[in-house]
Amino acid sequence: MFQGHPSDINREMIDRFASQNKSKPQKKWDDLFYVVKNTNPVVKPINNGEIKIIKQPLGEKRMYIENGIFHYHGSLLELIKFLTAYSNHQIEFSNMTDYGVLLTCSESDLNSKPHILQSIEKQLSFNIQTGSKQVDATIIDVVNPNLLWDDKQINWNNGINPTYVVGSDRVEADNMTLKELANLLSDIKGTLHYYKGNDNSLRDWNFHYHYDNLMIEDLSSSFGIQLKKEKITLPLYIISP
Image 1 (cartoon, rainbow, N blue to C red):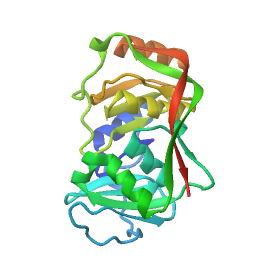
Image 2 (image 1 turned 135 degrees about the vertical axis):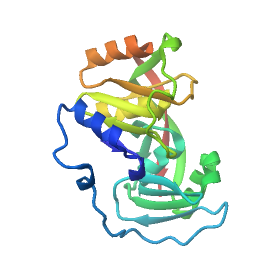
Image 3 (image 1 turned 90 degrees about the horizontal axis):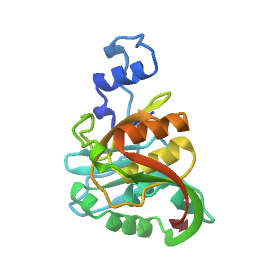
Image 4 (image 1 turned 90 degrees about the vertical axis):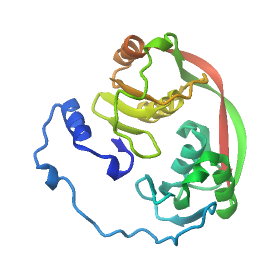
């Protein structure tokens, strides 16, 4: 699984992904891609500070910045996750279902994601309420911060969101915070992983995830992270018409 804009893909990423899966590409580099006509709705250029969002059919998530404009294509759920840094477990739809959206705004607007959230709430006519619930979670606890990697170990990402590859048994990620890592593990493991600390530094990652015992060992020895089960009060966003 690759997450990011297609322009972020490079030969090194594909070679690493292939080696993780113990396979070799059967085609030449130039044969791996082809050009298709863009069928997405056309959004007129926006002025600085203007936020535009429209509904569209659900499709694969894409985020990128072009000429100072941020573009998002994908589901409303994934957009709210990006703007709030919440996981799937923390966003609930009440009396409505998820749908596709196309968002454009100036790059500078990304410095105030709550403002973007308020704008799309108004434009799409839905309500966001906060809530909480008691749940069992796997807590990510950093017991040896000196072992954490910085953001200089992997250099894939030239975009505005973390880039990661999920292989058959390993995760490799570039520029991902501990909170974002917890959200990613929640998605790929299917159980809630949660980081309660305040370290917001961008970091690089490479570890086993498929088998729990190997993941626990790898995170402990390579990153100084301990995983522990705990009942927590999980904050929620509840989306309703």
